[in-house]
Image 1 (cartoon, rainbow over the protein chains, first blue to last red):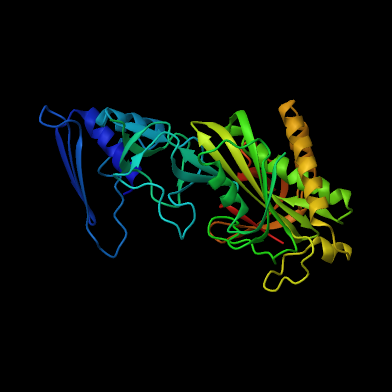
Image 2: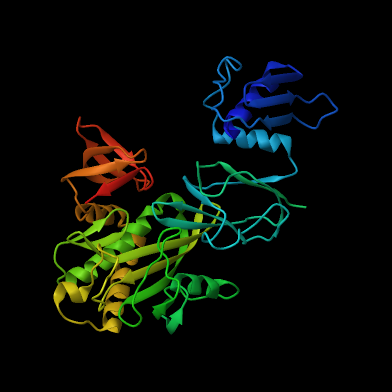
Length: 163
Length: 243
């Protein structure tokens, strides 16, 4: 189950009005609790059970899960969850790199203080390498994409605490 | 135009990018090095070049309101500037291999690496790196590489060639600023390597298929007409042209 499917699932559960959903398959266990005053937003616990086989198809457990949820929706979701944070999104389709080159350290990590204009990552498309500069100052709270993985237009890349 | 000449540096792109931090540079500032100790190609690949024999240089192009959606035009402008230069000195059988290698026959004579600085969806500046094989004649372990000297049988003055490329690049950027997008796009597509020729490709899964390179999409993807007349577009990681 990848991050997008989990995001879809959270959204689905939130819409359904259920306060808690537990889902368990061969290799994954998920508990989703929706906000009821005690929680700031949806809480998700994901536990990956390491087994040597591929996970079972999830379709039986999420019959109407919106499979075509867009990156934009995911961004809104994230924004709702953490409204005090700023989401930095990808301006283009391409490949996301956290390092200027494979032998160099990452541009930023969780906890890094960043200033406006600092380079956060590189997104490459058709041999054009784009240094993505931050438009805000603050602290990196979350890195949402793995190094060297493909990203879509508008896909959230980082959460930044601007305070 | 300011030209900074160095005996050696790690990479002219990296050097120029370092210079950009904390100071304002003029548009078209050029860094040229006789030797690159860590010349770069695509992520994780190198550009190797014998010291003093070739041109390895980078140009700063400042942008004013250039949306990143149009970024493939940069590949087009730079490829065409090099292509036009090599055509002027009568390099035979020239083509541009998508996205931005310059070939003579099926051998690579020039590589290009463009790095943009983005704020939001606007390109602030481009650092254009060009590696042109000029007077090197030995390319051990690089079977697909060639040089101007190997192709024409004589040595060339590096400064003279550098000036030719820079002049052509300036000309092309002026026509771009005047709205010459379509003309440039057509000029690029007209000289694409293996255009409209039956070619073999390999997809990400390792399968082979046949198709004809037809052009380049607005986003810069390669357009290939497949056997059943279906037009499909591919990005760099989805397809490999075998030649």
